[in-house]
Length: 310
Ligand SMILES: NC(=O)c1ccc[n+]([C@@H]2O[C@H](COP(=O)([O-])OP(=O)(O)OC[C@H]3O[C@@H](n4cnc5c(N)ncnc54)[C@H](OP(=O)(O)O)[C@@H]3O)[C@@H](O)[C@H]2O)c1
Image 1: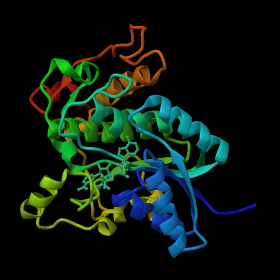
Image 2: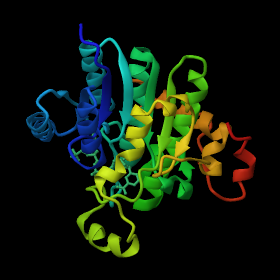
Image 3: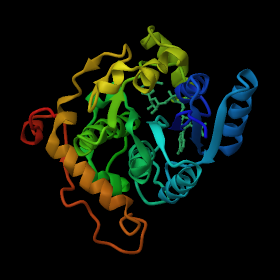
Image 4: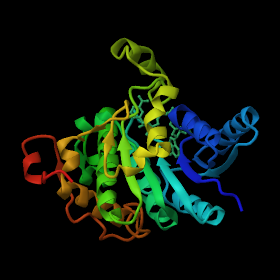
């Protein structure tokens, strides 16, 4: 029986995720990659295996913007492996235009939070003791507000690409902290991070052209993978739980809003209801609106919802 450890990672066709998968394969991990573009995933697999023939990589189709696809992918992963040592929720999108997922959610929230939330729930009982869950968030979560009502009725309010992205990354941090609380004492660590401002395919080409002028410190994808790899591989990092790390692998305080236990729990309850097969706005049945639907802003209201940091 192989003694190698298993990592499950999303979004490995390019960017930070591709480098992360490559490095973990080189470190001897069996890497199960979850990609929405199967052909691209297989091409990347070929390239990694060609460069390092001992690499063990599997490619599983998973569109994180579709809850059915996430369920199917989780089922395949569960068939492939009984234990997962590391789960890395890396994939993410920015969308310039408002769009709605097949399940009826605002697409950026669906892809960056709801899909990864469901994936994590469906794989949780397979995560080994001493296992690690890593959520690739962003520093932009400091600019985020959470509008749970807008997530299910995206047409009723104005859309801003930056606000939608910041909201989804705030959700990544809130999810991390809520899950850490639930996993306390179970020997599974969950942390999130900001990878740095990284030259990748995340932003549309025209912004990618301007961005280096605004952010001259822009890092390449290899640098962008460092904190994820630190959380996955470093022995000392195994002691971290419920933390937010910056691009230099340092534990930092997350945004005050992200530290609100009330908000963490509101998102958790809403997400649980939404990933329920009967709970999506696109489903015929109703009655799964989050009980605490409302707006959570980075304003003075924040004080009402901010508990002591977890
Ligand atoms: N770049 C930065 O400056 C920066 C800063 C802070 C945080 N981050 C975070 O870092 C993570 C990685 O981003 P990146 O910079 O490496 O971006 P990227 O180059 O655009 O790569 C994103 C990856 O996610 C995948 N993906 C997108 N939508 C998906 C879906 N619906 N289902 C499954 N996979 C999907 C993409 O696959 P396709 O090839 O199919 O599109 C791609 O492999 C993201 O979570 C991002 O929010 C990046």
